[in-house]
Length: 246
Image 1 (cartoon, rainbow, N blue to C red):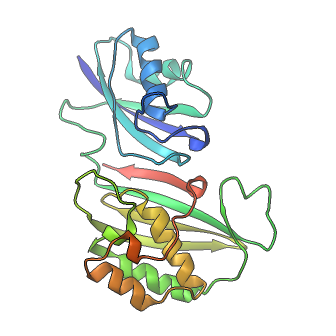
Image 2: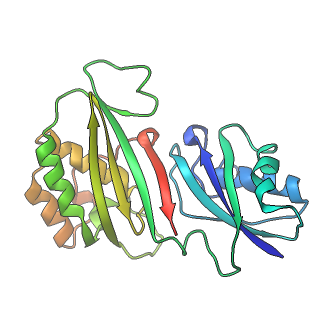
Image 3: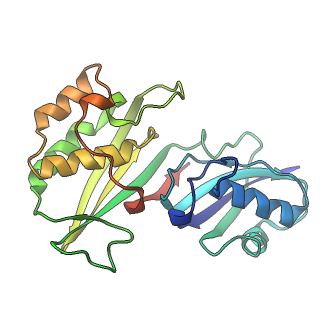
């Protein structure tokens, strides 16, 4: 039995997220069907993390074990024959039996993408969130700095009964502007359910002078929950997983 780690890229528009859901079209479901066709074995995979419905990934990793003699460098080519065109393997490597695509990760980087325009721009709109008014970028950068470090992000997650700790460590947030588009990069040790979409919503609210820096501080420093946070959860189409560091 050999263990492999495969890098994939996918457009999440037509999927209910990564994780398998009975009766729903998911990235995991498509991958496991393709692996069965390739190896003739029932194979369960471990993804590097959950992605919400509609979220895409530029560089996502999963691991699996299989009894095969297939050369590692041939796996992406063989696997892509059985995958839809909006999910495609990019690379593969053989890994130690203890490797886990999720728990071996040191950091993950996501980007949330925006554009500023009074009118919908058809070439941007499918993958970017539109903002009609100009933003105070200085205020947004000050707000982003408040998220850096280890905090309880309970007020920045959609409530769910997963029982996991709401403390996360954010290593870096970069706001990159180019013309009327900009991307916000979030790098951390992991993220909670809808955390980035809510954090991005909070940054936009600050940029529009609808939230203050003091409000962000209060949400991070006290036992607040999602109901206390007036920032909206931004749509998933503008969120993309950029990469994972191991």
